[in-house]
Length: 202
Image 1: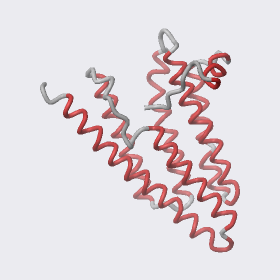
Image 2: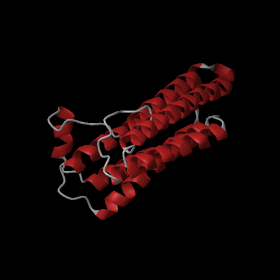
Image 3: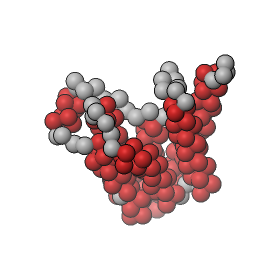
């Protein structure tokens, strides 16, 4: 589930006034996330540059949800490539965390859990379960906040950590990935329980 942005809010009205197309919002979020691994490779204070980039992706997510709801019919291209862009965005985030020292196995498992979660929710909607009535720990908004906090802590540690900052940054991003992994697993469990209950009578 992407961030819900009210159309009558100040930001919502501003986005609508730009006449931005839903596909452009998707592309903007993907391009912003593409530079996140670069900030990790540079290291030091550059890690904090990831925060506005992640924020821009979150804003693009909200803009897409708002614009798509106000569009009579999305193009087939946008419908096909929007989920792919979302997964690539998270892959770039995880790649950056790996560059900063997060364990490769945790990064891989987290990515797999997110993919399974999105696929499960997508299939549930295809069979008519469009309103599952719950927000789980595996939602896109939760993943975005978690990774942003990870980069924020890593950036602060990199600036003030002195000679030992590399080890401390590695620890910070490992905690972030572990938290993301656990929430993805719990979110998937929540989703499976709800979907199973909804389909129990079939």
